Image 1 (cartoon, rainbow, N blue to C red):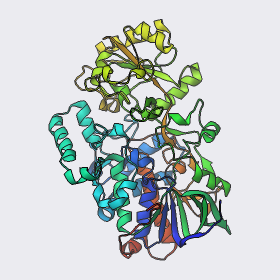
Image 2: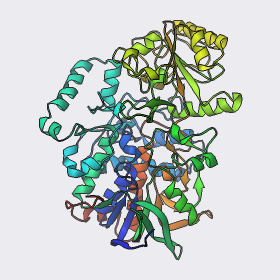
Image 3: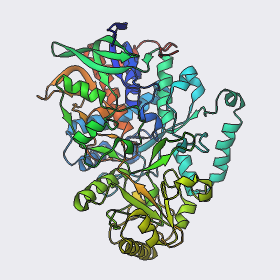
Image 4: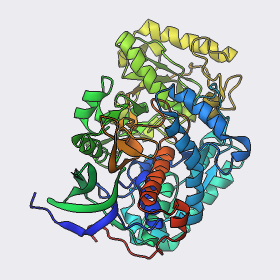
Amino acid sequence: MTGTKNVNGSYDVLVVGAGAGGLVAANRAHDLGLRVLLVEKSDRFGGTSAVSGGAIWVPNNPDNAARDSKEEALTYLKACTKGEVAEDRLMAYIDNAPDVVRYMAEKVGQRFISVPEYPDYYPTLPGAKAGGRTMDPAPVDGSKLGEIFFQLREPYSLMKMMGRVSMTVSEARAFTSKKPGWQTMLLKVLLGYWLDFSWRLKTRRDRRLTMGNATTGGLLKGLVERNVEMLRNTQLVRLVEEGGRVTGAVLSQDGHEYAVDVRKGVILAAGGFERNQVMREQYLPQPTEQKWSITPMVNNTGDAIRAGIEIGAAVEFMHYAWWTPSMRLPSKDTPNTETRVGLFMERAFPGSVCVNRLGRRFANEAMSYNDFGYAMIADNEKTGANAPCWLVFDATFRRKYICGGLLPGAVAPDSSLPPEWVDNVFYRADTVEALAGKIGVDKAALAETVQRMNSYAATGIDPEFSRGGNVYDRYFGDNAVKPNPCLGPIEKAPFYAVRVDLGDIGTKGGLKVDAKARVLSERGEVIRGLYAVGNCSAAVTADSYPGAGATLGPAMTFGYIAANDIASSMSNRTVEELAATGTTPGFRSVATGD
């Protein structure tokens, strides 16, 4: 490094990380009258949040309050977390998350809409709801961001039609399940893209931001309008502590180190450690590979967690992750490069089965992706024959349904795929036994498993693992298949298999925090001036995944809580009074490289 220097003097608040949690914290802190600097390690704003589905899980939210309550939400979260999380942290989330939704709509201009049919992930637990707690972001007009639009991390191509056209989660589900009116909806979305002539002359990228780009794009728009200073390509090196209080940080940018003085608080929102192989091997169940993760490759290497540990912070839940089974997908456009695709819903589609390397089932395939990951871990500990496992399906499944990076065969037949993908990305054979030989699975065991699944499909009952036996399972099933939308015969040749690895969408362990997002020391004391939110903090959900959006919901809520606590601790006025007298939004941003 070539020395240190101050960046634009001192600030009230430094926010490290430009995912959804950090972006909410920066907006809220500014609105409470604080001078804010937001720094992002990578060359794009948005973090993992930008490439996610963008949903937030908010119990008792404004759209669903008549059908929900704080009491039911607490009952459910206590059942999910099994006593591992302090009740005051759970209540802080339940109390504040609806306020975040209102704040986003009224002050930032980003609306979230309840999805009435999306059930909680544990529908049999007390306090669970059959829908309404998950909220999707309304689309955002990206042109409102100005040039910052091109600094927002772009969604993965597979999240867009033809690799170009944005769609919401609800639209995607309508298209894949062919809900009534899906063709009209599809035409409207496609025409909206192709008839946007002036924008097409500027870029092929869709300015209609959806999913995670809507969540992060809406928040970025708020920061642009508020004149909040933002830096990219800027990494946290270490925290500065004086007299038991964090008073600043040292940042690195382009080979230089910069000292930033912080008067009131540092909010760490820099993600987990899933892209750090050394930390994975230190903390996570084995086997584990950072390349199995589906998060952005340059992010989430545990910088904030390590910086906290260096000044005596405690950590918690370091052996947990937001598990998501993933499959390998080589890039069609860039030679010798591959990506990862999560298998979020495919396992629930009829006409398929997941087996370990002994050819045996080990779990309800339709369970949530997080729980399926834990099932892979448990089976591997028992048999030594999991991680990877295999998803096996037939020609009917291949024709009708998406499978990770494979579009339905009706849209993208095998003949349209690169020939080197055959028996590499996906395996194919004319018989189940021949397929077993190709993937190294016992032929008799796999044939017996498939035969049993065919008998379950006929009756609609899975006596082994109750696949399709609850509302969450059936949410991703095919309602045209009877009597169980998650069970169909595996009988039409050719037969297929894809390797399933123990992937993730982030780690859950991080700095131990209290109900105000304040970081705690190893002695259990508050480290003054230091806050942590999102995946660099220990998850408020422990090892569970209560519902869709339970990653972003807590990150944004505790970012909001942290900003509130910093503002209220510096004044005798309440947070509401401070919000009413916050500084007036301007229109300027600082972005490295412009």
